[in-house]
Image 1 (cartoon, rainbow, N blue to C red):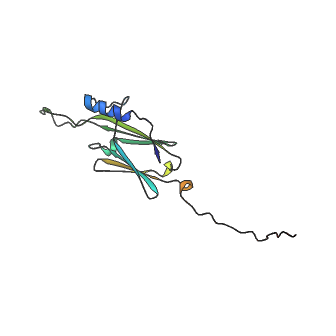
Image 2 (tube, rainbow, N blue to C red; image 1 turned 90 degrees about the vertical axis):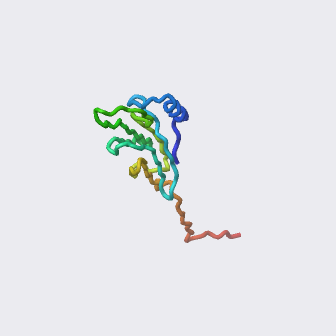
Length: 144
């Protein structure tokens, strides 16, 4: 289970998108994500189109996962005159708080086609388990 940490992040993202501002290291732009459970793991997918995998930084501290990435402008040469630039540039960041039912030690990350995918295993203590029922060898009988 994932826990939301900032209900106003989506509003900030929409405001930055509307105003055309790019993220900075002190005030990064939030990145959209999807999160779902698939069997014995949680999967979180972050949209990071056009970001070099070397520019992605993932930190885990206790139950907090922080993903930061930077998309820099592509330099096309000296004779290039930009006519239109709508794709956001700058720094993107997102923090996700994991519940105690997930194992942050087992996180894996893959980046393909502009999507960063984190896979977080469900902790052993949170998995369903069977409890064996034993029976006593020596039962006491009540005498009248």
